[in-house]
Length: 435
Image (cartoon, rainbow, N blue to C red; front, side, top):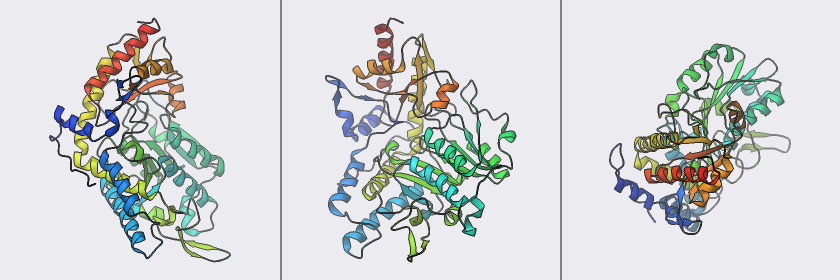
């Protein structure tokens, strides 16, 4: 079934636009908890999928399924065309100068591990091309205190393997990166700077230009976690001038099981592989092998073909709506949520209080009520949020909270759903006697 092209009011969605968009997402029609309307406010963890994405994957599986880049028969050729077409559309969507700078992975976690482990492999490689990536004692890797574990633990492991030192930027009391010591943290010893574009807890949008410029002054590689930015705002990775960037399909109306690593081609071409086996080879002899050019070098084995095809359809959907429309709608919802939550006595927002340089993840605590208890009351009302540390334990420790409640908004959410959230929070306060 062909996906219908979406047309919306430029820059601002009308109520009719939002209803039409919501109709594209079949799951939003269901009820939960004894017939209550589903209020899905957990898109920062996993977004829902429009019917066009579901149909695209089904069409591929039922009509074109075969192993890509492997056969000369018609189905194999069709499957390869579908797979590579998705790569081309994704590359255009993120501003990649070359299609072969887009590598398919199973998620952003694998994308970030790919870079970290390839750099570690380069450290122990005899290949002269890998020399530029080698790390050892005296070298430094810089991260930030607001990282998701997926952009922290791989760098901890790289430092453990190579003897390099891990350093980090702290977070200020107003929930921004503390760059007051920028030139003390990023020095000629810095080999890698890895940071999030948009915090999955705070919503903070970091100054990519400032950080990239500092890294480039000392010749360090830059690695951007773009999981929370690519689905919610226009992102041009070439303009941002980062060396690598990672994001996941399941956070941007696509399926789980597929992610993307963007990398500058000249860097990918010099890097050793992460995983080895079929597909990623140039030639194989009994005692040694040579490796294919990127992106094949980093796509060992049969890839997640139907998921990649569906991610291409998700990109088409976002492009047809327009990323400015998406960003403006989510900013309006976020501003309303910040206003309404802040008006409740005993609720503390863990993140910037305005929508300036801020995304649509809104985390908060309710004094006197554990986040998991708030989440249970909200769930009983049909409101789906995330509770816990959101894979950002160091950040929660920084603000001396064990867990937060996080509402994260997407294109299909409404102001009425924000009202349902705040009503649920007030219910939790009444239930636990803290209102």
